[in-house]
Image (cartoon, rainbow, N blue to C red; front, top):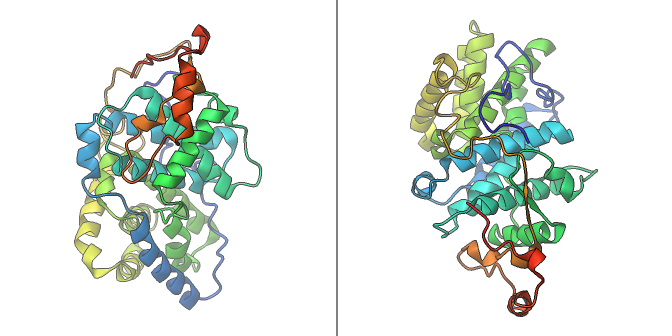
Length: 339
């Protein structure tokens, strides 16, 4: 089990390309009109995948800020370990945030967060990849608990119902190719460097709760603006002006705020995206090295603890399961998993 302390090099320096980044350089779109039409569609669709109001306050009140950070970090590391496409990280983060934002649970436990995280990543992979890892492969690193496949499948169904089966989410990463189509006139290596750097910034942004207040299109433009100012300062104003014209008018003020925060993250050595500052590594009793994992048997995982309005996490047949639990052998007794 690796340390959960923030001493790893999971976001590289700005001058060093991250493996797997810059994969959007080959554009799917053939004309500027096609690209701008697709962008308009994305801006409209994005609204359907936004978080419930007050989500950041919910995270604070439920003491979930540190748990969320660890989850996003786990998504990023799992993507690398399993060689998954980069968009999966952003999709899984969207599922995770949307589920918690609509959840009325006030006593989240450690196993609940980890089970939800595994389900989010598993569903995101199934929607994007051809070769799907086994459920046990998702749980090989950085988790305190180990779940049976049947438990994960039940959690997947709970998650799908809660999200209304709306999974084709629009994330900040969804805008990268659309926005950088305008940069095709640049030298390929420079175009790729800008995309790679912007993606680095977006990976840092989705890990930071301060950026949850902004729309995904605003995050994407802010990341590209920082990348252009860093890598192409002489021509950045022209490209930035073009990007800003594509963003809805009601997002202009937020664009200024978001860019300012992102600039601070890049420039400040304490909170830099390339170092481990307080904002990116919240202190938590969970930041310890764990030598053993806790096996949670399916017969004692109660999904009704996930209180989602309008959904019944436990189907009626589970009332029969509750009766069977009384007769379950003692080796299934995991009724007291620690938070």
